[in-house]
Image 1 (cartoon, rainbow, N blue to C red):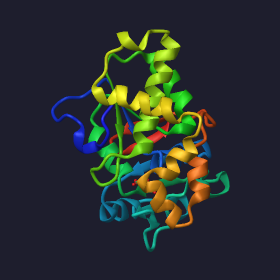
Image 2 (cartoon, rainbow, N blue to C red; image 1 turned 90 degrees about the vertical axis):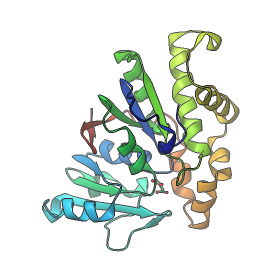
Image 3 (cartoon, rainbow, N blue to C red; image 1 turned 90 degrees about the horizontal axis):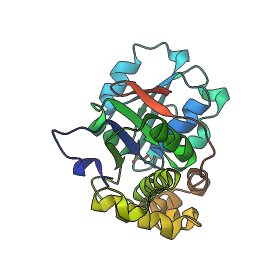
Length: 240
Ligand code: MLT
């Protein structure tokens, strides 16, 4: 587990890399693909997004842009997963840029397999890991502008613990960096009340200030979507 994209080791790659931005980018990605979006193309940079999206027919594209939790002016949507209903996104290509989540994806995009995870597709991500058995896995939290985020590391712990439980191996005999065991301990602390954890987190506080409690509640649901977002080419995610 790496808590931020900045802490990912340079010059090294795992077999499988997982980006996590529970509040809200990877929750929105899972929701949009589950609702039938054709693909999600992620950009760290807003200008690059505008340039690439111009090559796509207007009725078939949606621009999602968020900075500091707020919708970017001129974009179709902010980053609310609740907006990504089938009526709006089915068959469309989503061009997305968010404060941290798209940067986390960019930091791992050269790994042979790149997937995204949130609480609501955790079980599907775990199923993929058990089926494919990669020998090295990175779970990379998006954090907030280089700083630790409680909700992403808790979700990383939820994935790691669920894999360990399914494999029926004792925690003491598992390999992982210190962050992995810290993440598992965080999840064990909060698994019965993820909403309380999210409301305490700094981004949760920021979102509450923007009247986004319904988004926080949605993002804290566990194992509700059977969708696996997987990178098909650098920066492009499709339903696996
Ligand atoms: C991010 O990428 O930082 C987020 O997903 C922020 C948000 O949309 O609330």
